[in-house]
Image (cartoon, rainbow, N blue to C red; front, side, top):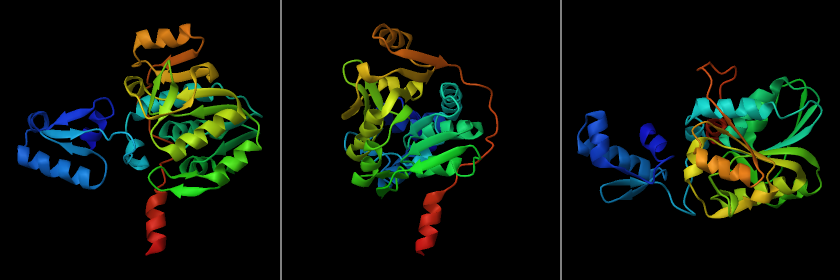
Length: 271
């Protein structure tokens, strides 16, 4: 089931027959697993397989997305952290790549981080040189993020040096895009509050589009991505005046800090 979710990060459709061949199991077994994913709201069933969720539908949960393209996201995070100077104020959204960036920022000094991501804030909570400002708002459990008017009110009165925002998709015509209207709104507010805005996302996002744009091409200072990004599209963005940093994933190394399952804690507290 995890492999299906990984495939749907880069493809719109996965078929039962190909999964049965790949895993040497029966199509009945595959259909059962796909039905489980569909009941969890992670995929949509179609004749002969499953497809990626479309516009306006549920998103893959944060904890699952955190385990996809890990080495690429960590390489992107290291490159993005190099853009952050000590003593600066930076904004991080609630994306999984921003979570890995937060881990890379733990050693910075006199840094202020503004975020609507609860796991991002948790990753920095005990970093001695970092002050964390968490926006208020309504909790979106699937993304472990805070959204709504309280979150945007904080950002409207804050001036931030640099913002680092994940995206579901991108295009030269529309800029960076995402699916959920509440997340898009807070990303827009973050971008407006920042002097410089950087997109941070792995190469799988270059092949995708999404319903809503949150920052235009002409508003981007740069994009930090990995070397799997399509070379022709990277050059097109550079020609449009956007700096694109494409990094190679580094060697597989253990994380110094493991992701904390706040959603489990929330459920346990309610029991």
